[in-house]
Image (tube, rainbow, N blue to C red):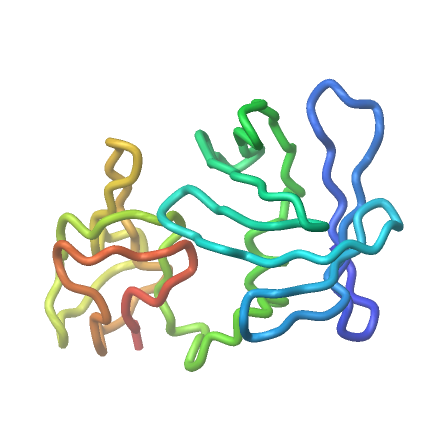
Length: 179
């Protein structure tokens, strides 16, 4: 991914296609609307609904549904309008997205502990004020009948926990703070 002014450029390799897909955000608005460029063609995009691992949106006046069925470190498998595809991820995608996130998360810092997946909080393993070591489980999220531990990214003390058991989180939502 590279940035040109406010434009963020991503390149995607779709399994079984010889063509690299280039996409960039041109402008975005608070209401979920955006102007994007896909392979050099400008398109209007409006997010209708995002729940769990499913996204509904309109692109150039056509309704689409995208469902994430598998998301691992090297690729993501999606169903787009009933057709399954796999996208290879850039090896440093998490760091790239973290540095350039346009979601405008307030208070996100090196002390912030974020969810890696969308899901439901099924367990909180620590209390505020507790000392933790890097790699220690802080919370457990459930998504698509799988449970994933959110682990401490550094040694420190739990300053706060922003979620409760039973609540739902989106990818990159703030779970808590470690100082």
